Amino acid sequence: MEELTEEQIRLGFWYWNREPDFPPESITKVENYHPRLRLNLFITQLDKTPKEQNKIVDQWCELLPTLQDIKYLWFCSKVNQKILTQLAKCLLWKGYTLNGAESRT
Image (cartoon, rainbow, N blue to C red; front, side, top):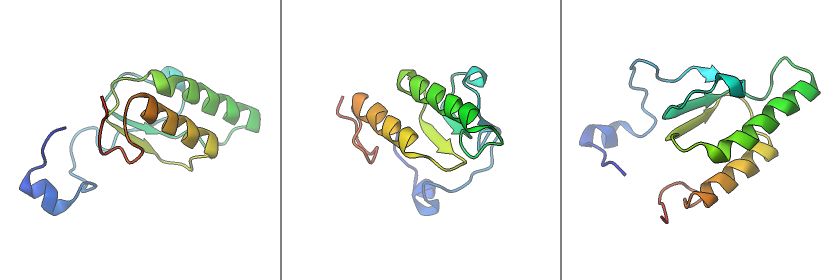
């Protein structure tokens, strides 16, 4: 884990430092995903039928455990229990504590 500078500590973790591609654009469809460190998902509260909505959530729940390159993950819409459960499993399988502060690997 990289060390924070004094300036980063003073400003706090969620300080918005304007830089290119930050925050990252949100994506909805799995097929639009390309490996990246920062992933912003917009996968609920869509203008879709419930069947289409569930399909999108199911696809992401299947893909999330396989992603190796993500350092920061945002959700710009509500997270339902299915997504939250899958994320918790992903973190535990990868050796992280639930607060994400430490890795057991």
